[in-house]
Length: 146
Image: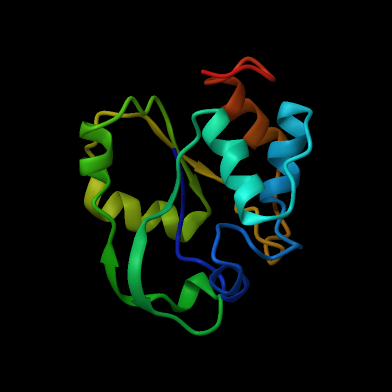
């Protein structure tokens, strides 16, 4: 399971995760699996579903200025425990520091391992694809389904 913080303005406009073309998320997944992801929400949805990857955001509602995670306030947290009790999630990857902080406020004691990942946002100058690849390798053999 990959959890972001809250959809960016562009993601809200496209109606699917990581909708900003400058976000590194889809390029990173494409490089890891060695396959083209596609650009439409339906192609991207099919890509992650075929690999058993769940995408969600830890924040379901909030006050936010533009797409700035740092401005997230007055938020509601997603019921992650419901998903975990009804599925076989083996690892939770938290896409960026704000997603990690909010997750830990509510779910620090969750039984499923979780990791802080460098944000794939174009605003993050410290993005590190190798960190993502290492985490993905712990769940997947490159190119294979779980």
